[in-house]
Amino acid sequence: MSMSDEERRIARATLPAGLRPETLAVRTALPPSQHGENSEALFLTSAYVQPDAATSAQRFAASEDFTYSRTSNPTVRSLETRLAAMEGTEAAIATSTGMSAILLLCMGLLKAGDHVICSRSVFGSTINLFAKEFGKFGVETSFVSQTDLQDWQAAIKPATKLFFAETPTNPLTEVCDIRALADMAHAANALLVVDNTYSTPSLQRPAEFGADLIMHSATKYMDGQGRVMAGALCGPTRLIKDVFGPVMRTAGMVLSPFNAWVVLKGLETLGLRMRAQSEQALAVAHWLEARPEVARVYYPSLASHSQHELAMRQQSGQGGAVLSFELQGETPEAARAAAFHVIDSTRVLSIATNLGDTKSIITHPATTSHGRLSEEQRRAAGISQGLIRLAVGLEHVDDITDDLLRGLSTLKNR
Image (cartoon, rainbow, N blue to C red; front, top):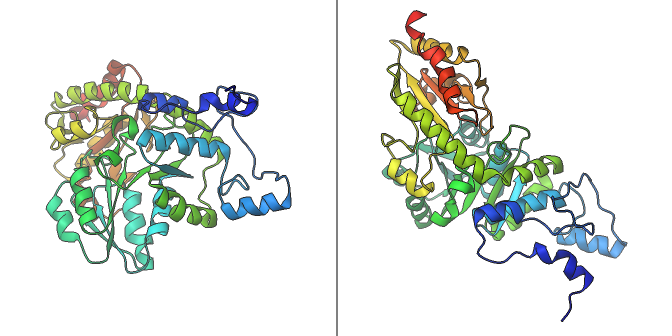
């Protein structure tokens, strides 16, 4: 039987089963247009012309065809399709930022009187969103140890609806047992959500360990070059389309087509970048461990890491590209001054609060990413004034360590 013109046009868009994540990251997308473009098209349009009123009514009622870009866009849909394939989930929904993905999650699943259990080691803005913003609307959150399963178990209440974990965490790279938390959550009739921003699906696929939903700040490694803001939720169709879809259409935390296109292109090199940057980070971590000025290094690939074996099982034997290290001081003020000196002495590294870039980024978490938390919250999360976070990029590793040495070697001379 010969193919029709339409079948011939889109034949290469129907991929065979069993492809590896690296291939899915390059090939998964919507079918090309009639022009047969090899690179996915960027659809910069807010509206879509309908052939007639009856079709328009049908498409708006179905909420699946392209009608208005607050509800759907071909470029955004391609990103969602690709990301779901890489995470091994049925569907994905893209959002304007990583924090808006968590906002969408909460608006879709929680109501007044519900209870959330969240690791106390997650990103500072995540803590504030649960504790402050949703606390105002009657959602209670218990913050527990990232690594203590008994702490999670003890926090369960009849109203518990959600477990939220970030693994590895920002910035101490603490790792949780995804399978154990999934089993615990399901026994309590709750859902487990895993923030997979640090590892990405190139290193870790939480759904394979039982997670119900995977959250991403695609601003980070999925873009990979610090260009755009984006976020996403990945999971089963019954949640992504039937629960979060209606909230998205109403609330509008939608990802722009241009940003979606940038991230879509970034995903094509994600596997290569994550492996290369993980190797770089491990080399820097080993170097820092040998420095007398450094009290402790936090990095999952190090044998000294508290959850090293678990991390290697869950993260494909890689540690990711982010590490943190601690400088000591006789007082918190002295420790912060030491950290500031090392940061300010750099000439190659970027002093910024983002991560996931090809350029290495150094920051002081206690005054940036976790600066809006109380000192009590920071202490509970292990964020000291002497802590420095380094997101390792693709510069030559010796240039990275040489840059850190400028400050470390002169600490006693200040």
